[in-house]
Length: 174
Image (cartoon, rainbow, N blue to C red; front, side, top):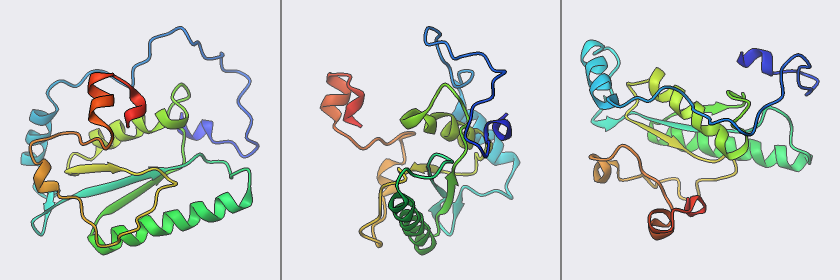
């Protein structure tokens, strides 16, 4: 399905029905016992450690649309941004994945990261942390490290404004 969506002419296939804006969307079946499933998988697959040299395995994930930017300078900055991420990951022993494929037609723009992160979580249970970073973000302090030990009892860390997110229930807090 993913390969069929990548076209060199940038046009959509004519034989697919238009998307409905009135349907409820799901990125997959609910997983309610992920911690137990993952622990069992790690136990059965010791060749895939979730800690290496005493540090958690981290996967930095980023991505951008498959088409070029409207302005050539945008592609130049995108390339600089990718190099910045690769350099940071090399310095800190972090794995990196850069995605340019649309994995789901109904989730585009900012929401396109959800099916990608879910697929990575399910297909790479050996990764202790999946770290999303927008394609236009840069590391300005190359020695900075997230204090993951501080978050050992958490499954999700979200940077943002807690009062706006939890009290006002606003997604723009992220």
